[in-house]
Amino acid sequence: MPIIAKNFYDFFGLERKLGIDTADLQKRFYELSRRWHPDRFTRKSAAEQADALDATAVLNDGYRTLRDPVKRAEYLLTEEGFPIGEQRSKDVPPELLEEVFELNMMLEELRGGDESARPQLESAKQTFIDLRSGVDRDLERLFTTYDAAEPASETARQALHEIRGALNRRRYIENLIRDVDRALNPAIATEEPVENLL
Amino acid sequence: MAYSDKVLDHYNHPRNVGSLDKSSADVGTGMVGAPECGDVMKLQVKVNPQTGVIEDAKFKTFGCGSAIASSSLATEWLKGKTVDQALEIKNTDIVNELSLPPVKIHCSVLAEDAIKAAISDYKNKQTARSAEAVAV
Image 1 (spheres, rainbow over the protein chains, first blue to last red):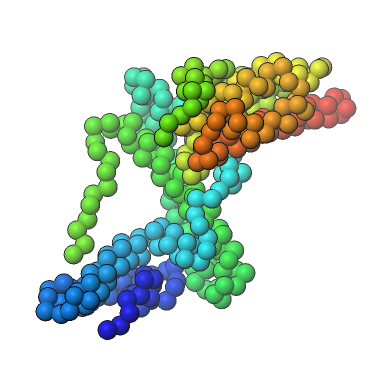
Image 2 (cartoon, helix red, strand yellow):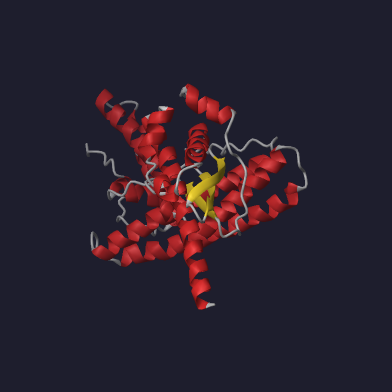
């Protein structure tokens, strides 16, 4: 009985890279799903059944994490000892803060019942969606840099450092877009749909 | 999580909410934000250039109760202080005054950053103005 790898990359038999072929990942996911399916373990020992259950958990968490570029990068950063979310205000560009402040003013007006803020908010939302696309392009470029660099080299560390900054910026922007959506459509539930993986 | 009475008081009755004329040479503006929680804080001081005393302070904060209370308290403390005294305000003073729990310490750090940013903006404006005066 092989020991179940806890690291998602190891579990899927992938190199620890930030660029991943998601079609290949999906193929591996289906293969591993079949291999660890509980139905195949009904006649096995309790220990083997427990292993299969563990494997299924890693399989689902791992697939959900690795197929999403942002979650994948967050995971790799944490694994490489770069905890995310540790950032001071100095790291946020001042122009972005101005935009964020203005946006919050508009949100407050709309929540206060001032409907004239609505069109402004719509256009502000577009601004932040564009900003997010910009961050995504930065991330793509940094992923390539990281993957091309020697593991644990100065270049790799520098790339991870910049990726962390970009991820924090992205999360900030993402929260703002969510706030705008909630203010514009208070009736619509913004819960993420729960996907059925198996 | 329970807020302390002082935080609640500042949150329910924030002092000095508003804004000052950003373009005035006697006004310093500090804009800071915390990416992890989405808070954004604007703090402004109006300084008497002759005496260096802060005559007015205003703030507007979008964020949690502790962030609002920290900046509200900061504006209260700033009024009547000289710019140099203002720079001596430490985030730990705010933590102690408001009894902020460890998870909310970053709010006080934000307020300290905002004070420093506002004063530095004021000083930059004054330097630019005296440079202009010399040039004329």
